Length: 377
Image (tube, rainbow, N blue to C red; front, side, top):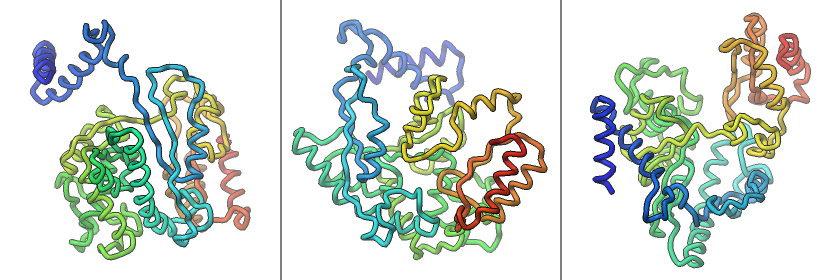
């Protein structure tokens, strides 16, 4: 089969007159064509039609499993679709100094994040027991374990149980490579300059100290953040490969940097979006079912309707991510700046650090009025 792939890739490359640097893309296309070509051994069907019988077990903590359960369709009768099971891993946040019923970072302050990260290490033992039970029941280890980059201990579990571990990063390739290199090497501490080089990145690519998270700026390898991230990332680098939420066409340079840094196979599987959006038929139920505990302030239909009223590339999009935010004073300055810009915008707001909407109702109202005055809400 390897010879078949190589020969077909060579034919594709020669026929298209491609340079040698496009060999990897030619191989990918060859595999794509082979998997979609009818075969006598499969009764004239293609390989993609024969991928049946897989069982996927998604392990998470109890409250998160409840949310995930609402996202799974129970109406499909398509036998070619894999079977998906949900498994609960016991977790008690209050045992680790967290508020009761804490199983994600939604209601945590930034200062509490690292406590939550360290607490997640307690999931290793129950996860080992879960996989051991699956092996005992099915008589063989799972094909592989796919784990988030924050669960580096999954590599140890996989190795001890005779299976492979693949690390998954929800970020892009460039960002993940930077995140890993910064935490593992702490390069900003090796110079007094505000600009510094980052291992794994081109010399021409210099980072500035102000681009770093406040906890990363002061990290020295012995702090509570370093004690979590450094061993976790080191374990993730021992996995069999990585899945990255990006696409080859979106950030080819970022993927080159990332692959050179991890020195492992990297498969691009993104950008990951709800099926309803991919099918160009948004439905509030299907889209927000992906994160059922989030209550949308504005429906996706209204957002799309509003966007359709504006010319292409005319709307500003502001977001600091689902877990990052800015201070109240910075948020007010940004709001005033947006008002002065006169540009239409969509601003995804997470309340600022230390901000209580009830206590700070007046300031929050000012921001809301700015949004309303520009026709944003």
